[in-house]
Amino acid sequence: MQSDNPRISDLTRMFTAAAGTFAGMAQETAEGARERFKEAMVGLDFVSREEFEAVKEMAAKAREENEKLAARIALLESDVEPAAAKKAAARKSPPAA
Image 1 (cartoon, helix red, strand yellow):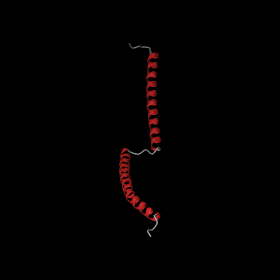
Image 2 (spheres, one colour; image 1 turned 60 degrees about the vertical axis):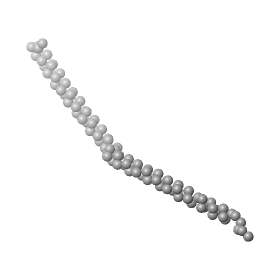
Image 3 (cartoon, helix red, strand yellow; image 1 turned 90 degrees about the vertical axis):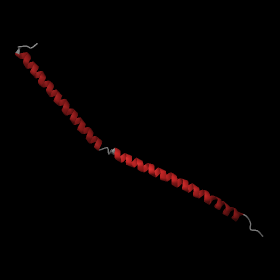
Image 4 (tube, helix red, strand yellow; image 1 turned 180 degrees about the vertical axis):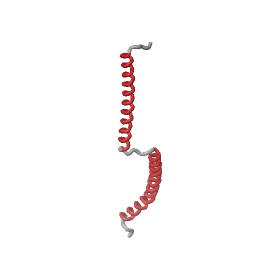
């Protein structure tokens, strides 16, 4: 139903203009907040997924290498300990007369 009253038409135009203004303000506010959020995130020094995956792979390789070296050291120490024990025993025993 449309009215011929000019005051109602003026109010309708005013409310329509106000609604458009509020929608524009809301959009500008959202864009401003989005920009501030992006600026804050840049300052936090996040890494990209590719960089994270590369470092993760390097850490896994280093862990494997560390485990191999630990096993090798244990093997070498097991070979050295019996020989050291024999030398210590030989020093403690009196010489044969």
